[in-house]
Image (cartoon, rainbow, N blue to C red; front, side):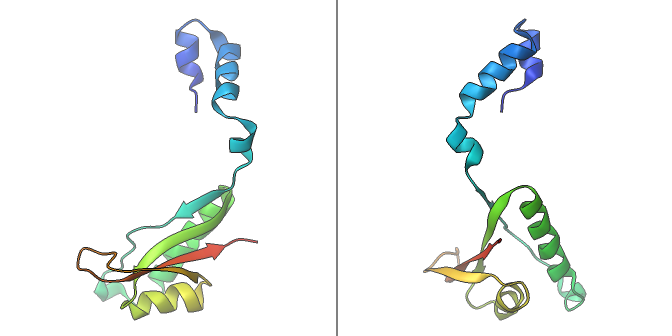
Length: 117
């Protein structure tokens, strides 16, 4: 993104900033759909089973959708049954890929994606 303040300070004015912006963003890039990514969600054990994780994910998903994303992607450890239930059963994420030895502890992960209509 081109900042108009920088163009104005250089003496180019607002029209120069718009010209630079149109060159920097071809029409194909403007129309490209974004994909959101969610990482590192954790709820302290003393606060689990209160709906906090579900509420956080729903809030992030809503925001990504409003920002124009066509989907949201995340990874979670295969052995994390609680996270798998949350993402797949409650929120509608689907398994997209098995990532073998994805984590530093050599644990496998699933890449999950939630597609928007």
